[in-house]
Amino acid sequence: MNTKRLLIVLMGSLLFPGSGHAASLLITNGTVFMGATAPSSQLDILIEDGLIEAVAGDLSATEADHVIDAEGRPVTPALFAGISAAGLSEIGMVYEAVDSRLNKLYTGLMHPEFDVRKAYNPLSSVVPVTRIEGYGYTLLAAAFGDRTISGQGSLVRFDGGFNSFEGYTTIFVNVDGYSGNKIGGSRAAHWMLLETAFSSLDTKKAGGLWLTHNEHPLINQTGRATLKNTRENGIFVFTANRASDILQALAFSQKHQLKAIISGGQEAWVVREALAASGTPVVINALDNLPGSFDGLGARLDNAALLHAAGVTLLFTSGETHNARKLRQVAGNAVANGLPYEVAMAAMTSLPAEIFGGKPRMVAPGFRADLVIWSGDPLDVTSAADQVIIDGKLDPMTSRQTELLKRYLPAEAGLGRAYINP
Image (cartoon, rainbow, N blue to C red; front, side, top):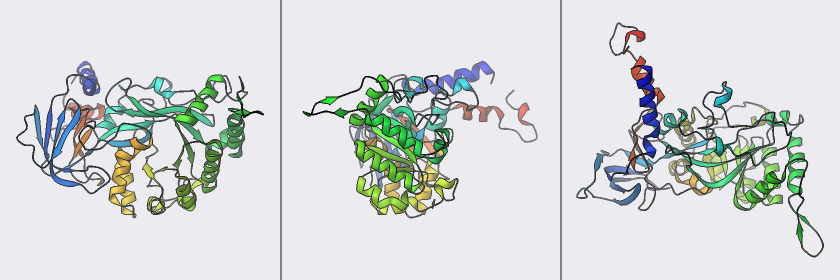
């Protein structure tokens, strides 16, 4: 395949989910994961105009443009890919291919109004690479740069659309030790700056009237408006691993009436009672079992199980963008160390959309038809996505990686890769 043909194929695979009319589709004989319950076997799913029309024991008499016999294989909603910069970071060392962070901005201010959604590129090769592995959406994040407040993002669907965002505006705040070293040399600097910024959002005078400042030395008017609006209508994600940092985030959120989520949480199990009492969800990487820094000296494999047993709501992330597709292994590892299977599946499908205000991800009539037919157990690392369906359309299951595989994998023994498919 020549370079021009390869480019055409790749562009076609990228654009496919967002183009054309959604034909009717019937999936028969599936082991269907309806929600946060055990799967039901031998169910049929009828899809019309991008939505699930019916889920029943036998719909074989129904006419459809396409019929897929699942042959008893698992059928789930398309999975959540965790917190990532998919569509914002193509190659980390190429400056024009990274749009996920602020760094050395001339203003010297914190800019919560920095919105990475404006730089989102659905044609990034990362998107189909992740999608064909069974993932339908991610929480698009402003990555840590050189500010305590990184910026804002939200959920985004992997449907190839340029405006496929949904859910609450989410502001990302870094309060861990690594970022503290970049901000004044101490994690205490984070809380000093945050307290100063938030304390100016509202001031109350006699008579109960609220006054607001027009300007503040740490943030501008637009940033102040963003913080106020997100405080009322959005979510703040605090990156913290150390138990003491998590408690500081909880206290700060309670003081300033923020809807907070902890991301990282390697020592979250230590303060699980406080997390449960505050109703604060935690996003963890369940593969974190050894100290990667002094912030995570208490990392342990049963973190997820301990948090769940205490009543803490859990989500998963791999901490990576280009390997977000490995998140099934993260969730499977949590199950192997005591987390109930149904809880892990909910954390990978419906729960992230619920928490971040997205459209429901469930296999039920009336919901979006973003589904995956798996070769086996979705949380088994040896299983794979046999067919991904986004917005009721069959994904072509191609990406830059699959095309390169066709180009360079030897098809005939005895010949080097350069001699195959010239």
